[in-house]
Length: 77
Image 1 (cartoon, one colour):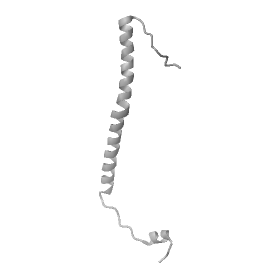
Image 2 (tube, helix red, strand yellow; image 1 turned 90 degrees about the horizontal axis):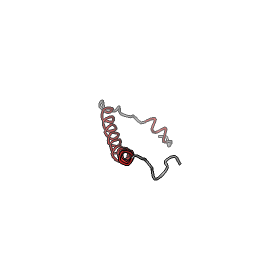
Image 3 (cartoon, helix red, strand yellow; image 1 turned 135 degrees about the horizontal axis):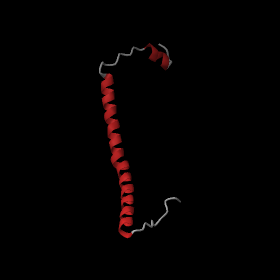
Image 4 (cartoon, rainbow, N blue to C red; image 1 turned 90 degrees about the vertical axis):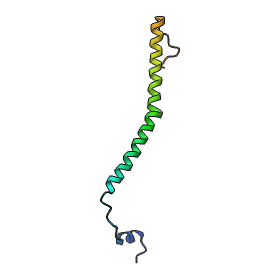
C-alpha cells in the first residue's frame, strides 16, 4: 500500500450517489437561499425603502402645507 494520500484515494472505490441525490441537494439549497433572501428583504431592503419613502412623503407634506420646501441639510454635498 502506498503512503501517498492521493494514491490511496485513487485506488479506493467510490460508490455512486443515490438516484435522488440532486433533488435533495437542490431542495436544501433552494430553501436556504430563499430564507437568506427573505431575511435580507425584511431586515435591510424594506426598512431602507420605508425610510426614503417617508422622507419624500414628509417633503411633499411640507411643500403642500407651507408652500415652500427648505430642507435642513443638503444631500448634494
